[in-house]
Image 1 (cartoon, helix red, strand yellow):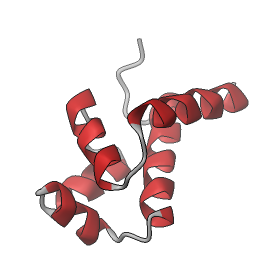
Image 2 (cartoon, rainbow, N blue to C red):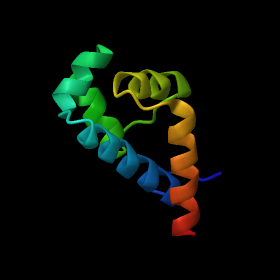
Image 3 (cartoon, rainbow, N blue to C red):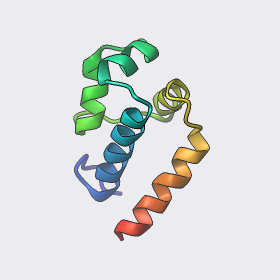
Image 4 (tube, rainbow, N blue to C red):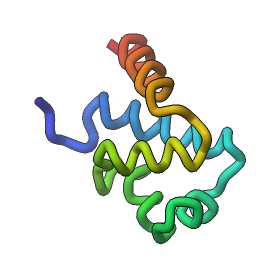
Length: 83
């Protein structure tokens, strides 16, 4: 498995996370407040400086009111388009 944060899967993941946040009408600061983290937390996972574990991803999905199973389906669909 590619551990690089710049690989295709991570690029698709980061783009999707950014899109979902902006479609929810949230700035990084807004989302950070909702999840109880500093703005830099959001910035770092969106830029690829850090990874999210599944619990963090679930918490973010709940905050933006986007079900985690739906996120997984969209993520997989986006990956298939890129391959």
